[in-house]
Image (cartoon, rainbow, N blue to C red; front, side, top):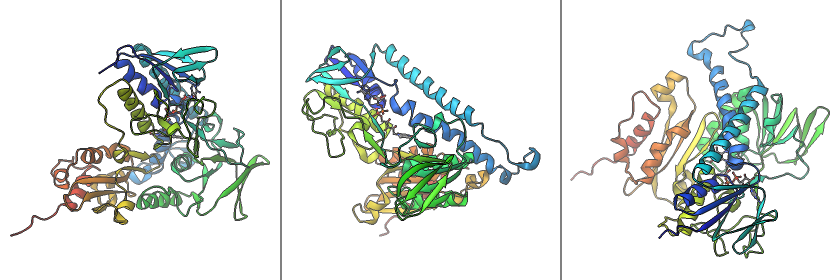
Length: 464
Ligand SMILES: Cc1cc2nc3c(=O)[nH]c(=O)nc-3n(C[C@H](O)[C@H](O)[C@H](O)COP(=O)(O)OP(=O)(O)OC[C@H]3O[C@@H](n4cnc5c(N)ncnc54)[C@H](O)[C@@H]3O)c2cc1C
């Protein structure tokens, strides 16, 4: 049953916080969001939205670089290519778009009657949030304060040559020689984007391949594309420091080598914003890395205090943060709620080509943890891919061996983020490979490879 006038106070206005606010307002609660940096959070202002806006430009450049293969000829004098990057305009567009998106979030919250308080919030008692001298009483508190880039001792960012992923948009030029330290999702995305924009990129990875947490086949395709396009990928190379040197930077590696470039971008993980929030005083014991432990309905150890998003360390994605926030409100306000299920989360790495995944992993299948059969179809044989000149990528599907139920998939392709939805639906709805195989795909289309992969997994009817 809904409590019509429950008072909800949310600390942090990112996707974890603002999506929760919308649900709570819909359920009739009196909702206040306290945010110190701007609505939409780091997601909208510094992380997802800016990076994907930059990538929209770099994708366009990558397409133009391949344009001659599709029969286009550059008319520019000297034939230097189809476009050059106007870095100040690119960055201005990124920042304006982020601000506009933040303003949209603010308007939406205002339209739903959510009160916004600008400032830093902290728990000042079991059911009280303090913002400066103001005390806000609450029946329910949601902490969704996000995370910030992890620092590497010996590589302090100066915002000019040594940068975090949040500082690149303040540059007034394109880095000529960019050293990206870290080859996880953020490192790979920025390396891919800047390479396409025209920087000479060196990617420093402490592991033996890029994207070590991802599907190995998918990571291998992306690494191959990186190298073919001229990126230097240094595997098994741990950076121990980054220092200014003349008008460039010098990154020292643990094995004694040094790498020189004009700029260095540090992408070595994120740490939670959980200090100084009064959490311990409220009875919340942080985990070893400073994250707030929560259960699958986003409850913390303290009664009436919920937490959502990056500050919980649960799969650090905007979509997961938003779902945790909504679930918290449904639970707190007495609605029927399904606990968070992470096994069906669709995620994308926005490299070029993109890697989109959902459901079980190849590793779980190979290790025998899941009894599934897999099929992998290269995109190179897909007619539409040929027309566009795409040759890197594949579709991989996993289905339960006994029943043929779809368990997951990996798509490596341009705009794989858009193509994965069909696989997500199949996994979520427990469709079988037969049902997938009987679904019409447009001809010619990249999605045709998804239905074809399903056909390859169909089992012949047993005879007799
Ligand atoms: C470069 C990059 C690209 C990314 N791209 C994607 C992507 O494409 N897709 C995706 O799903 N995820 C992406 N992510 C992850 C995504 O940004 C996060 O998972 C998401 O922002 C988490 O949302 P949140 O609400 O937990 O926190 P945030 O978005 O970080 O918002 C937290 C808010 O709380 C505020 N705050 C903190 N402390 C206080 C306080 N004491 N009082 C008041 N306010 C406070 C902060 O200022 C901030 O506004 C990316 C991350 C990075 C670093």
